[in-house]
Image (cartoon, rainbow, N blue to C red; front, side, top):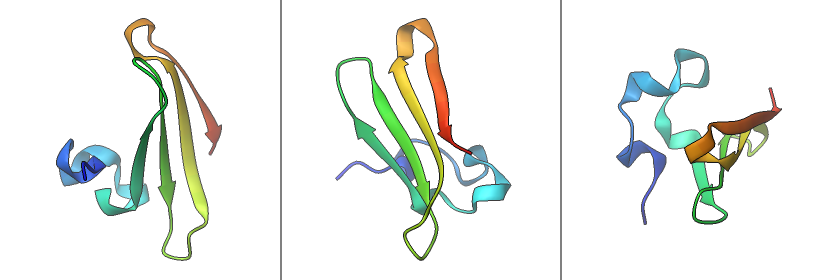
Length: 63
């Protein structure tokens, strides 16, 4: 299974959110996805909805 940790280096996801292990990439379509970070308890700490990666159309749904 492809995971976010396979796509980025440890420091690229931001020190605030720890390791890449807590990140999940959910592909919704050819150009859309959801990027989600959960803590050890499974609580969503950050979520980014990518509507169209080619157009740079994205927004943060959980800060």
